[in-house]
Image (cartoon, rainbow, N blue to C red; front, side):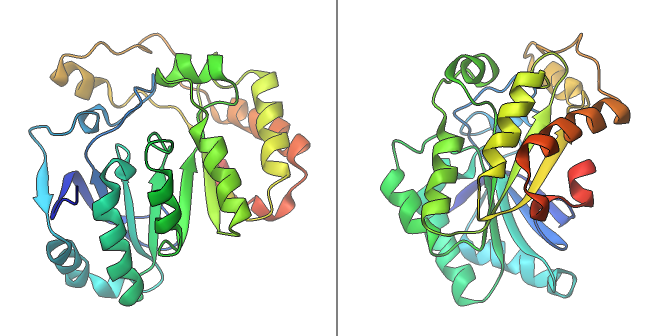
Length: 255
């Protein structure tokens, strides 16, 4: 059923990492994953104390207020997982396309199998997809997200088939996602992709601990260290060695 308003728990007026240029970022409420390293647990449920309900008109008004800053950017929809509100997103994306506003969607594709036909409908209105890849086998994916479906990998193949541009992000977590075999598999995967424009290797951080405490949720990685720059560089070199895809490497891959 179409919702006339989106449920949003956070808005960033000047996002600099969620797509090209300076961007207005809306964080949509709701996520079907429970990632061990999630830094937005307030976005898990369908609503929280921070939730605002905004119409398309209200969202575009926020954009218009700072439009001059978004000349080389646009709007990014993130979460949570925004595709849990996919009916609203289709309407919103159509309007953005009509108004020539660059739209990026950041997702882990948690509901791909439930709404696959709607994903395909959305494809023609979205300028850039940012796919947050969690793992490459069911066992790791289940452990990290509490869901064993490899939806991100499957959707990347759909984007390839439809020749749609996208980025891939991957969070590097000590003793969880930085094993040599995992990084090798990641490198081989991205190396075979034709329409991948950029790869982002993101470092795990523990700055969300206070959020978990406020929500009275146990923080599962309390003893996990944050990797230093040299450890991240080592991981990046392994991925790059097996990817052999020079066009996706940029300074953003190292931040």
